[in-house]
Image 1 (cartoon, rainbow, N blue to C red):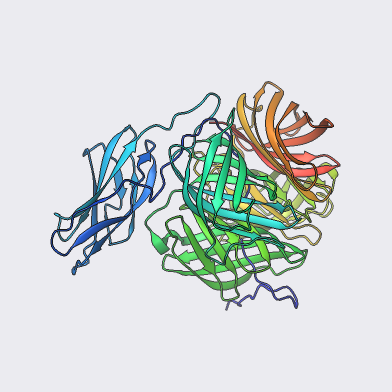
Image 2 (cartoon, rainbow, N blue to C red):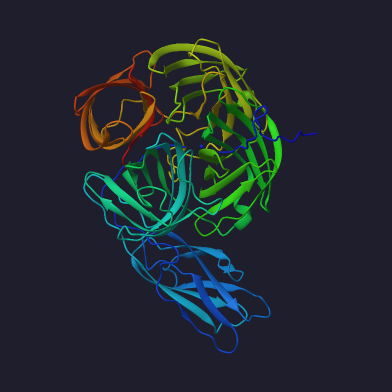
Length: 620
């Protein structure tokens, strides 16, 4: 019999829950169509039945873009629902599903060519009664050296440190129109010693703007109804677009510094069935004075009932393998729902797509954010018989202690070996290591590194995820290197962190072309974040970045840097980078890159004055 877990550390009364960080890159930004920001619906109401578009299509959409639509049928005694159609027939797009109950969502997919579309919601019981909405399908344009963000809804997640040295995180969803206007959204903001969103309803995002700067960099402002967040309720972010559906993001104002990701949202009309099956998850942050990370396995039956298996690292102490039942709510029109256990494990989730969610806790005194990914079953130790690239690091706010990255090979028989770089409080090492691992059939396992091989990194929880997911870019059609990946949680007594284990693709020299980069680091016990764009040619990298050092030197815009890349001839896929940052005074910085694929590299900073982790992605 499973034992219920109350997720409490010794005599402390506390509850727990969910993790991610990544990057962006791009160029010009013509916005996106938002659910609900549509043309006026025409409602025909002969007799007593009427049809009304309650989630109208956007007035403008990009070719191939998606949007949720919904209509209600009033005074229909048969409750037959709505049939969806569009014109011109055969070239106007599609609906999934084409029939819905009154008020239920359908996903409209625009055609791949430009044109003017009429969407019609028809009463099933009386086809003479309908409501219509007009959509103009147009390309959003582009710009030299960068991609454009497509129209639609995007999910964002950042985590970092506030200006009063408090750990914080935000997850939310926004809608963009073709002109880059933020037409709506919602978010959940959690911090220690600072602002918080109402629990669990969150804040309403009432407006904002995505503004292109140059060479793929942009600024995003979000206007909220919560004057305590950002600067008088307005949050400002520096972003870099990787492709039309993925960007890197950092909060770039006087209220806080953080790093994270912005990703296109694909919602289905599944309701509670949005969570159906097993997921792996983790969150990381802080509770009161305790640095923490926790996660493991979570599931849903498609009807609002779930189950969790949880590993906890609460400032070096915690419980492992605890289980409990859970309940969850269906996502709203911005993809937000809740997932709760009787032990008060309280999570808000935001759907990115059917396989990826962003997570944030909403219990008072907690500031944790993270991610969930579709899991795998019917696996064993023999399943892990390959080489991985991995990252494992602290939450880069006050209390951060380390960052690690490397390569790890599993032999299929419970043995592991590899090479890793670890920077623990400015003490950097690069060394080979050995260890052992276990893996259960449900994807729940562990890794034990021989003590001392990787400084204080020795005990990791491992939870295997769907190999088709690209952990850095959930909308990418190319998986991480083309194989398995897993979430890892550091369960050591001296360090607390989380990360990912990724099967690498072809290991070649760094690519030539435009790049996007994000780094989160700890400098004299406070956080520093950087988002930038650049290019690489041969062994030379040039970059322009926005650096948020709000707790020390402030905000620095468009700092330039140059770097030289050297390949490690012993460990293929590992590269050494020495860079010069044109700050005052000028800084020399040292990094190690580990290659995930032809377009993605993990970054580890190995300086004595600062340690950090991040990612480089090639612009698409």
